[in-house]
Length: 383
Length: 170
Ligand SMILES: [Zn+2]
Image 1 (tube, each protein chain N blue to C red):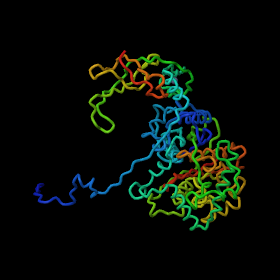
Image 2: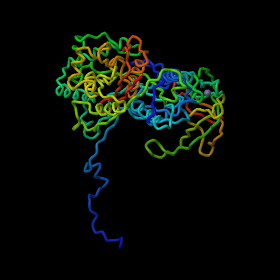
Image 3: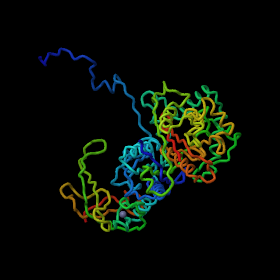
Image 4: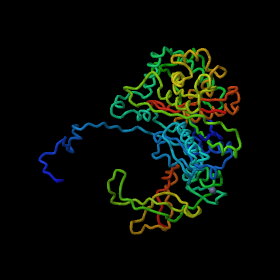
């Protein structure tokens, strides 16, 4: 019999383009206090292991994991850092509890993207140094190339992608955490200048600073904690081959396979019907459509039409990125998946205020690790 | 079974050192352009402001009763917020030191450097500041040495750890 694992606490800062008055440690501390208060735990006594996500190049510090314990209350405690999106840490925490080694696990992710002065150059360091990087194109061109192939293969049109940007920026208007809310119209979006055509500027998320801390607990532990457990029903993750020359450009196979793993654990057969709320990667507007299809929320080539029909609006049949997504909340680097997980938890608790998706009982959260990656993770939550 | 035999010719591709600079063995070079500007934040920001004013500020934890430097927003022992600021002396005792003869590029130094942790007067025992010792030699430096900060002139201070030139014997 598998142990059940719940999310019993979430804490976050607002997400902002800049945060000059606080250090990353102070951002994390703020979120950690909120999460521990939410869960009703003392991190110095009640937590068996801590997992953080961070990328040395994003932090500007090698072996960055050494700097994670103090502000989390994790000094002299078991801690490890994963160089991947926060949903991978949720999966690791889920497994630590499943094994019976741990009863309570804390997961942390943060972004201080504003402190990176050469973000495109850092991103370029993710390209193969020998046969890709010397060509010196901007790494976001890979998103333009992926979008071009996606449009051709699925018959999706550019206007449908722009509708994703319009929807998510408008959704963000109701999210007090989101800095990029805008009352954007399709006409205004159509006028957005090309960046990495077919990708235009308005379809690209901008970065934000912030931190998220999540407390996981075994079913036994939830009984002695206050609050409202949200169950982790399934987790999955997957990496495609990194080779740009031979990868699948028109579809997100990594998302399809990680969802399959998570759905199997969650016992989900028809995600389009069983998922009430999806918080999925929209680093670029077309990615939301590509991911909807890969995650089985619709058939291939259908996502664009669903957006057009309003099915993915907050009050639609399948609300997608009610939070505003990365287009509305800002991209938080490896903390992105945790921000979206926190949003899903709020809906499942009935705490999402004006954004609340009524009657939401099952939520899908998915992350992608950005260009040039073809990897990501999926978490299915339920109450 | 005999395990020795005579080799007349080593097969494979012989590699000379000159083959690499002369391009017979291929490699690709890249100099990363990785630049950052880290927000100092509340605790370290105030610490740096103190240095600019010629003061070393620590924080006191009422829960574990430690006074520590550099300041931090939260006590890593107690997970309680730290809000009591304490000015410390700029004198202290060498807690530990190394005599460093090697540079970042692995070249040898004729004159060694002396990175040290200095337990500052006014902070809790064992709680110190990491800095450089000056006006010492390998013969005179030792754990337990009493030292004092040598400050840059006020107009040259920028709010950085280097506003203290080094610590020197009292
Ligand atoms: Zn303390």
